[in-house]
Length: 95
Length: 359
Image (cartoon, rainbow over all chains, first blue to last red; front, top):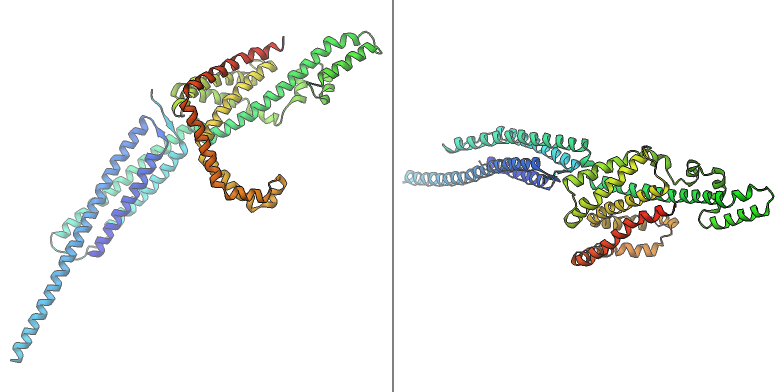
């Protein structure tokens, strides 16, 4: 689960980094006029959608990490209880 | 007023980046779909799968969108180049055109002045020497007139060209072979095209406005562009033989185009002063590293090294002093207006003064 979370976060970061490069290219190019305005508006819409994808992937990665921690804690607790039960069984057997 | 500007090279570069972004989106989408799902608590798996599928689908859609925009930009860049608008307005191209214009018009003015001097010399010969010489070959009077003619005209026409004046007998075409400046063939061929390019860009500036900011844009649009349009039209018609300009007319047109060229090149140099100063500082390094190469042009190695060691201060001083000068100019609009009116008055009266020399 942690590995999956890492992969999702890597994709989210890569998309975000890409978006920054695209944004600065489109804003920085020497292009003025009605067509330029429409193009920049369309690009802003796409970048907005891309930002949503990035944040959904990041949220999913965060949830995976939280669930992984819970699972680890539950496993540790289960092992502790198993160890305790084994010890009590041993004590009962020796009596 | 709608202003449309496009730099084709930047549009094409951005289209290229969008093409790469499209590829990265497709790769990211494929990576997401290929992820192996580990064991996880019930309910979580459904959520994670939903997010992954939605993200992959979104990335595929974005890949298509970036490809569309990239194709649109590439197409617009191509039309801008075809229209000749973007290429002609690119600083590097405009600077090259401006520098070539300064060179060719400067050479033309110089050669037309030499032609005019030779024509004047022939005219004076015909009026002062020829009638006396016609009275007899061994006339001392003719010889004295001829020597006086040589003495007077050698102050204007170089001694080496006096024989050509007599040999040409007033034929301007023959005189031009002697008076011609460098690269005459190239200038003649290119001179049939460049005036029309200037007419197009000047008209475009007058209609759409100048790309220069502030007051420079107004001067460029309402003063320089109309003057350049007129002068280029005359130059183009003369180059094609539609009209025949006298040497004086050629000088006037050439001087006007030189003024326009100085304006264009000066503005480009000012707008790119930091890059130019940086290039000067970097270029000095070559001379320092290659003192033997520098030797023939007489750059002392030690002095050059001093300049190189202080190149950043020098470059900064060049830029700062230029900015200071502009700052002073912009703070004194009244004085600038008065100076400008004086210059304009001198320039508009100049053609009359030059034409008057032929009468």
